[in-house]
Length: 406
Image (cartoon, rainbow, N blue to C red; front, top):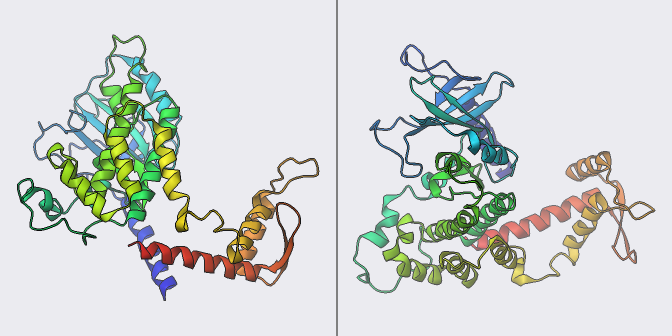
């Protein structure tokens, strides 16, 4: 029954995404809406229009709007982020745009192109990104409940009844927070290694696709909007911006741990850290302190080290977790798939071998397979049916441990 429910959910999710991708605006009700913008057509607004046309966003300092559109060159959907009333004067900033276009990471929304247009009746700057149907922002998913801020706002500082709540019902599981940290830190590592800075590490600019996949959105916009033409080196400020990225990430993690963006306000920081101390591990608390403390020595490698220490040493940090029982067979099977060597010692990769073995594993066929240990002192003969059982058993163990942390 659980498999049926999962299949039904996936089917409904696919239908929902398809409907969003195919949505079109009624031109008879919106006569002033452009039918084409540069190489894009079939525009459909993804956000409600601003209540006040003069109201600027708190993030970019300009009025912005977002559309789904189809590119006439490849017939694929894209997300267009329009900056209203912006005239691009200096094209030197396109050096940074070209750098962003080269970054393709599973936890960022890829920037495809930037162009200017007057199709909306005024000068506009448009950023074209990959389109992820059904995505919602972290702000909408996790911080859309006004009552969650009540702990920080309904009473004056220090005037709360009794001790701070332990394992408050509204708090997120720590395993989910660490999953988010790993994804965001991985994105920052790629961005910083490329010599760029994210500059949009904010819950309103982090998309959630599927159940827990994060993607940093709107990358590159600040680099264009705030480009200083008098600066000889457009990358000169990147170290300071990269440092700010880490501080912003610390604030995002703190907000997630408190289930409230009010917790990151300066007057609430002490109360927020007390809440974290009572409900989460010291590793999470120390990481938040590390990256909210504005220490110039902190870098992305420090963050990755902290993540690795906690996230990749599960089950009481036992390094032998995969060395016994069913899990050991799966480890040998992984080596059989991906880590075989030729007679000369070079890696041997055969896609047909990998696909064939995985298909047999999925079907659980009774065919036998020989698995050799890395020291070549042990040979185990098992069937694909045995390996499938081992896989299901190990996965159930991981799932049970995850549920135990909720």
